[in-house]
Length: 384
Image 1: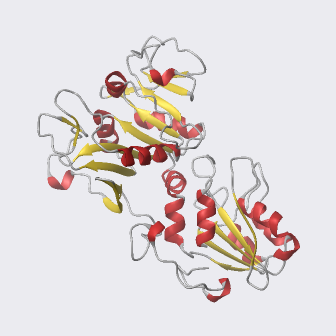
Image 2 (image 1 turned 120 degrees about the horizontal axis):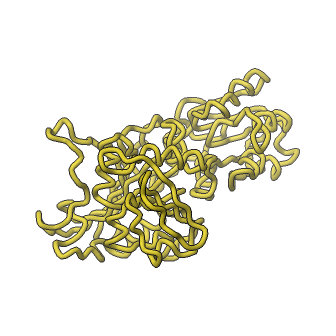
């Protein structure tokens, strides 16, 4: 199963609106005979790829897959039926499919006489597919707020300078984080102050994310870096704002204004409808506060530098209406990673259903257990 999780990660950021999924096929004698992963929407699912490699060797064997095999006909056929046609005798999966349209593969396989075991290494598989799983469970794109700041929560010095609060290791990691998301979102303040590009740098490979700019009053400059041809850009304006003229293949979207700010919930509904399942919020402080206040935040990735700037410096987060300690947003700590002199914190607004990886917050550094044949573990969290 751990190999299947690794395979799934190969396509992170390239499969929306579908999940990342990995699959390993074991022959009847327990030896691996095929593996595969889902490469993108409309392409073969992980089980189909793995079965194609395994061929006749799959008959009487075991399919180990990170997500419950689907039971519906979409752009591709149901994987549960493909496993039955291949003669698979046992299916081991990590995470039950929360999508009601696709779920049902496990009971279909059981009804056909296949032995089915679920929940194996669920915590690791949940983490690898967290963005998609969170989106499907919430019914909107998963929203991650990313910021680089000082130890006292400041995003820029009193004179406005912010480059560079964090070091090169943190900046490279932040670009890898960007590559894993479908869309990256900034507010008009960040647009004016930093003129961000929102593309991928630091030798980070991946498909460019949709760049989304909140610009209620339509003040974006035609020469803004976010309007180059490196990736598509969506400029979000108010309902009565004169539409700006944009170069290239960029779009303008009107959304309502609520409480003086663009309605983020409406924007997220629009992004969901166009297949976006994960949004990386990169700035600024007012936009992040609006998401916190409306309960639209799922995760926080904070790059904290060993630097103190004091109260006159610009904070990473504006006021979001928490007058008491109990009214604050209490986060769950996930990973803690050192990047040079900086520290990267992954925090969540709610626990993952699968929990954290036992023994360490970061599954990538967990000790590999002794090898075990797939049929040797059937309990929740086993290591098939």
